[in-house]
Image (cartoon, helix red, strand yellow):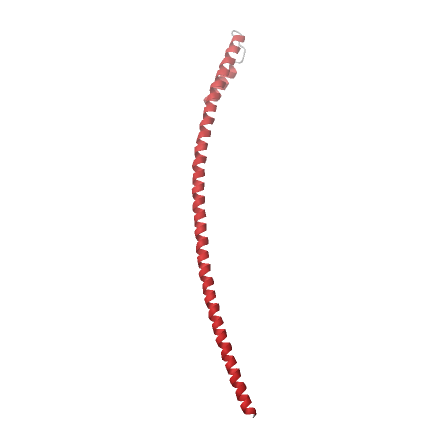
Length: 128
């Protein structure tokens, strides 16, 4: 709000007055130039402070993002390792089950072969 008042005052100083003439105009221009220069320096200082604050914020945010990313990466890796262990245990169980199934299959096959041989003997003895 203060800037608007100063700008209005500087603008009003541009008007030629009957008693002041061009001197008042020149004085108004000098005053306006000083206001622009002083406000420019203040704006440059404000922008520099804002840039520095932004750099600090981005630096903190970057380290926070990296920390969060590392934590996320670690949790993903731990989950993958757990799934790998679970899958390994499950596959080992399937292998044991397959081995047991093969043994049962072999036992059944030998039993059927011995039964087939015994039946063949009985048929041969009955056929005589």
